Image 1 (spheres, rainbow, N blue to C red):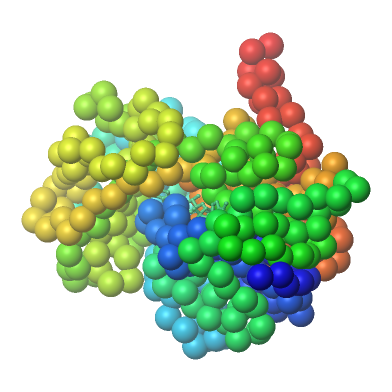
Image 2 (cartoon, rainbow, N blue to C red; image 1 turned 120 degrees about the vertical axis):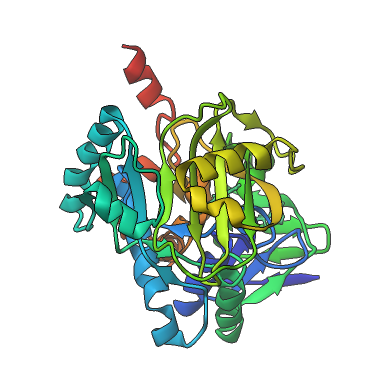
Length: 388
Ligand SMILES: Cc1cc2nc3c(=O)[nH]c(=O)nc-3n(C[C@H](O)[C@H](O)[C@H](O)COP(=O)(O)OP(=O)(O)OC[C@H]3O[C@@H](n4cnc5c(N)ncnc54)[C@H](O)[C@@H]3O)c2cc1C
């Protein structure tokens, strides 16, 4: 099979699907290809659906602000249910150190117009009824953040993209990038060859392999994280809750959970020691450790029935910042990879940027943001600075 398109998106995940959607909405004839059986079946479906703009990095703030604008109005603008649940993010503080870290982020976030306030312990208890009060100093609460269903969003977006003329090929793997005279010409898959002057690589945890195919190193190394979900209960927790304390179990760094639009409690933790690699096998220690942490923080959660657990990956870059931009050495090639633990919330914002790079030939973001995202950066600059 040989066909010609305006743009080809490799990977139909958290980033590839919104990229296809925005490219198609700008009038391009788009092909999106995924090696799995349907859209959103890679790391996308491992996400618990948290969407917040309240980061410390300007690029992430700006990209996630765009995502929030799109998801919070999606139902009224387009009529589809994407599982949007407003309710914000809450970071409770149980120590002076965490309080000062959280308060230190507020001025930067406010400079970008974000609402994130320090609230007292009683306000935290209203947001998360039954939260442990001993040593609770208060916490931050950002009401504009929220949650979206990672199972619904890609399905809704691809339906719109297809209606706008995009084409989706699943169960098809890109095995070669076609480059001639320093410019991308298309891709070869295990089933055919497709031509386009613009190719967007959005392959998540597999991105370093695409780097090998392209002859440019793409420093994305996945590490794995586990999550789980309970049966639904009556809505009682508004925000997504992030407990930044390391666990007394010695195995966990922070942990976070929330109640989704269907009333299910969805949860995960960050392991203290990283599990590098793409092994998606759930570990038997995850649930006992997580349950002890969650019940320790909110004892009334002990009555919940856990439905399932799973394991997925964060596609990490060395500096923890995604790679979004055109590659200078290969004309027509855009990278949208290395989304770390925030690819779901970055997806729509990154998709808009990908469309702008393809159609307008420039970033929409201001320089302080795109400089941090571009492929041609020193991925180890922050680490070198810290060693000085
Ligand atoms: C437990 C857990 C909880 C998380 N919670 C959140 C959260 O609350 N909020 C948040 O924002 N993020 C969260 N994340 C992170 C988020 O899931 C990822 O950052 C995001 O899904 C990465 O998106 P992506 O599009 O880069 O990759 P993916 O969604 O994995 O998409 C990449 C796609 O490329 C395809 N592909 C790869 N190679 C090829 C090829 N050669 N040919 C064809 N197709 C190819 C794959 O099949 C895949 O579908 C969480 C992750 C985990 C593990």
